[in-house]
Length: 395
Image (cartoon, rainbow, N blue to C red; front, side, top):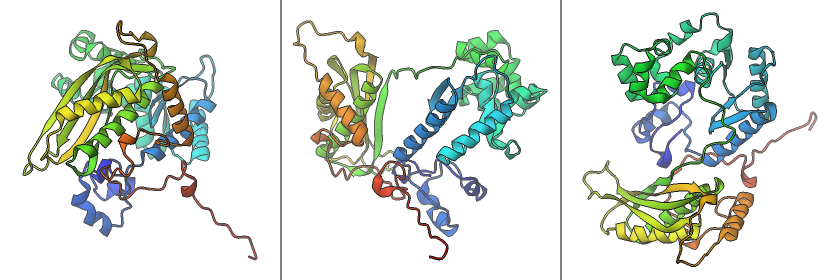
């Protein structure tokens, strides 16, 4: 699987890994090798991924009462208290149901805390012996398993924390479990201390019934080709604002400021370089696509400089707050297009993204990122549904 603009390899099958194909490898460098080995290459297909993720999560929510959707490909389940059953068997039942209803293989890890559950899931995924399900609570010596897991693979421990822990002689999840609390809190903050307690089997990170509202929303993509004209940059920025505003309204929020940024391609040093951003403070907090586009394009005009090959543009909505906390201007007349935005979102949800859009966001969009190896939209477009051909005996 390739990243945006078919740039880098971001996912590999086991067969591809066995050929020595590295994560993050630039596609153009190994394209001849991939063709020689007849490796199937696909562009990122976010519409398909999102739809399949929704289907998997719907199955989980159908099977279990308390599910936290953590990301597009990960969820936490809180099992009913007091209910006793074979967890491994239960995990295989869930796994088989998801596979039957969606065709997606999943791995499942059972543990008393979310941090341990992620490690159990890692064991289930990496070790074929467990057939996709691993129950950490059934293991006699949990420390033996934690000792085989590098500290950098623990949820919440990134590269920088790993270096700091390694310098302290902490190399495994087991080492971290028995680390000094005061030192951990000082070096890794209270969140790091919660991770340590979770490794000890003490739940500190609860299941969230609903995802927390985002405090910042960024929409940005690299262009499929260099862009030089202000008109095409306006199309791109208006497109990104429209998507960001839709996300903002979906969480019932409003934004008080927005950032617009432009950048050339730093990997082409022979070309003139330019990278700059601007922050626009809005007259009052809003989630209106029209208002946000107006101010974003105003900021873009200040940023734009002719004579550059721009590779990327984007917008970020900031100072986000609940829509119920809107502070009105004392002097400006009250204006609202809430009903218009609601209608816009309903139409696009029902009939597909960009069914209704602002004309300034463009139509042909020849600047959009490349996806030369895009798979079909098997589950979201009627004309791309899988076709099954069957024959009957004697025919």
